[in-house]
Length: 249
Ligand code: HPA
Image (cartoon, rainbow, N blue to C red; front, side, top):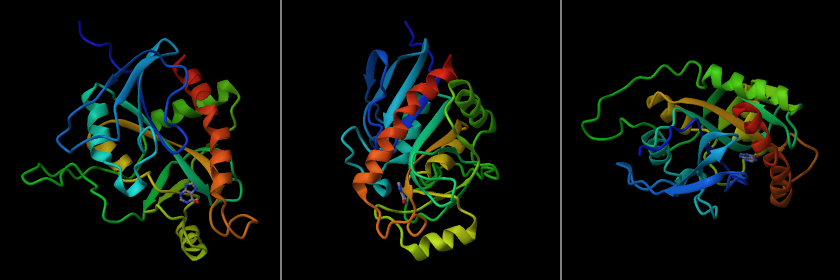
């Protein structure tokens, strides 16, 4: 019997290592042409739909953002039949209304990462694909998240520019000031190359950003506390299954 198709894939970021409420769970470890994914893909039923979940940093958070095998992750989800992917990302808020625990669905991004493998074309003999990336996120999937938030009564900001930094360190105040001048509203370490690779595979892809802290120099604190980041993240992450249940119902 063939496996039921996947309605939605979720890539969990920091603080989201298991997807709560999945039923009839099975796990798939896939060999990919690009090496190992971050871990097994967890398949299960959620809101009467099929959901695939993958912890981007590994289930024990052992992979730093610049060491995540983004190609293997997206290839594995695509190979299992996923066509819609939501990347959940912890971020720092740059814009004043994007404080800790805010949920944002960005509509633009700027890539400041370096040294990451950014394309499936980065293989000898591969066909070179110049994807259109004017709009890096799939409008209909973004809208589905926003509509679901409305139905579930979860406050969510529509739009914003995600600046992807290399990490794993947080940024300096000067770096954030520059990003602000560039037009970034949020800063995170994992938004790229994930979004571009999803587009190369023709996957629908949207980013759900969970604000864990104000970015360097944007809040009142002189320093950013990692304990506070994880506390805010836990509160924001608790909304994710509620939101996705509303989206899939
Ligand atoms: N910068 C980059 N990535 C992040 C931050 C930040 O301040 N907070 C959570 N992820």
